[in-house]
Image (tube, rainbow, N blue to C red; front, side, top):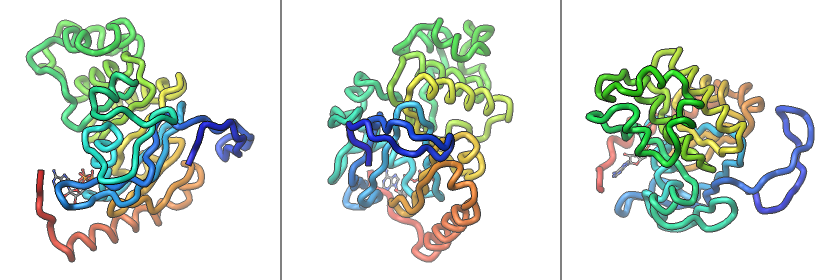
Length: 261
Ligand code: ATP
């Protein structure tokens, strides 16, 4: 776990010692569930400013639950969430005011409004959105319902980052999108990280996660079972994928779980 010190730690990517910054966001021994059903069991992880961390895992491993707990949408049964080393305020809107941006799978765009109107509803300026994602400029006056899924996702990401968050959490940002759009979105994430944002993305594909991230955490049944830099983890792709397969097999044996809200 990171703390507020300035410890020098080796950076395997660059081979030099760099100061370990206070985490932009950190889960400490988090237990979270739905009703009486615990999903995350003692989960601890941190995302530092300037890094992209991928959360990997099979369907049902608890990736979305982790994001929702970090964002303050779900309250923990026990454990805590810290932002910049301090207890995170309670609830999504307060965490957003404190610098957290969340992109859910549903994109949260208003289909009946134009791209420009959607950007205006964000915390940042339209100019900042266009600087991050110039592809949106010719689409500004188009109704979002008439934009492609990829264009909508570019809008969602640009709007979130234009608000200058310190933390960005994104669930399945690139799922089902064309390679060109995926490249745009990932480049934008890297720009944001280079400007100091701590980025946590949920991914299902191990190889893509390793390509775009600085670090990777693998979740299995609500627990982090593997964690390391992308460089360290790139030699463990088979092991990561085997962890998914065994999870899928476990789920098949235990059957579907009941859903409570
Ligand atoms: P996926 O890749 O399929 O989205 P995930 O890793 O994001 O999976 P979660 O969506 O976090 O997994 O779900 C983790 C577990 O919590 C699953 O067993 C799921 O059935 C359960 N779960 C998710 N939402 C609810 C809910 N509203 N009520 C009860 N259980 C839920």
